[in-house]
Picture 1 (cartoon, rainbow, N blue to C red):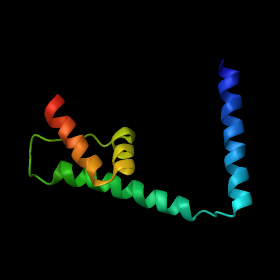
Picture 2: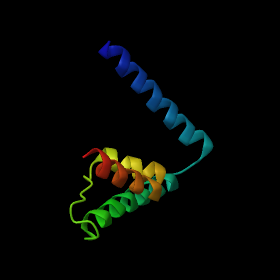
Picture 3: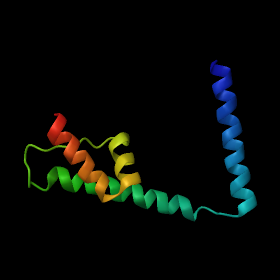
Picture 4: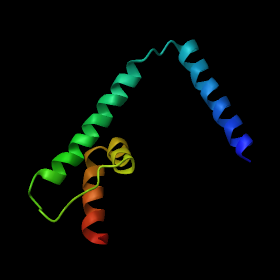
Length: 87
């Protein structure tokens, strides 16, 4: 089973490299992705240390950064809402 997953990963990586080479996308998308990750982490950091709600702390981990990365500022609101209602 592990060999199957490794094979799928290798095939996926080869297909991604093929697309990058044939479409001449370059690495500009990587720069934009990095910028968005930093901005998502900064948004969570601002929420944590703004002092508006002292009892509120959203952990800064890959899951929360990905949520904010995909959803933008509504992702921050989603995390704050989940933190206030469930915890």
